[in-house]
Length: 125
Image (tube, rainbow, N blue to C red; front, side):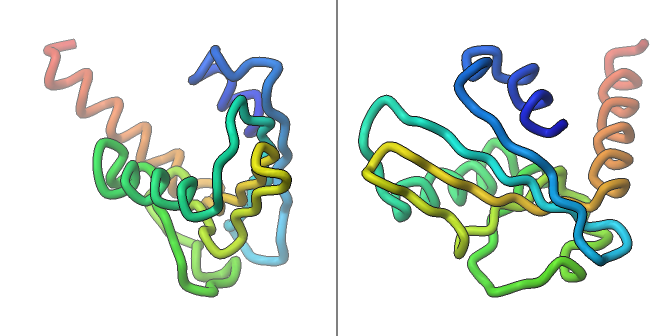
């Protein structure tokens, strides 16, 4: 599932995170529920600021960050791979972090395949 995919992208997280995707009653939107045990204390504000900076910076167009109270149908046809639901971020005892991220089951994946094809074409492959 999504937790396994995250560990493939970030091998240093293998064995350190778990999560599951929740199918919701909308045509294409799903929700990933990730829980992390951190090495140092943090706050909801710090975590959300980091996700928001990544979404506006190096991961723009791939990662999204949302602070509005949206519902599953609002994420249908979103081209980003994942959109962090900032209103749902939770920190317990400073080091237990829970993050929800929404995604459109097909749209984000299809867009990443187009990105890959464009990258390969630009490399002359």
